Amino acid sequence: MEGRIAGLRTGGIVMIGAGNGLRGDDAAGSVLARRLMGRGIGRVFDGGAAPENYCERAAALSPSAIIPRRMCSVPT
Figure (cartoon, rainbow, N blue to C red):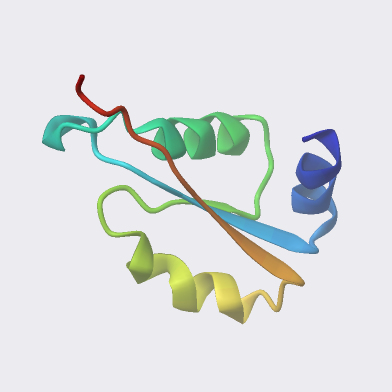
């Protein structure tokens, strides 16, 4: 994980977090994105409920990789 975070800092990787706590998932991807952004890691987007809206912005940064992050809880 530390290597991926280093990639976010150096510019090779872009992460797009996704999730919407109001719609029944845990919003973990958005929470992670906001936490990384709060630490000054600038190649991270909080895509919220519509992460596809950030794909063009992420691609414009010419990254070596774009990492989508979406996690959700499954009711049992």
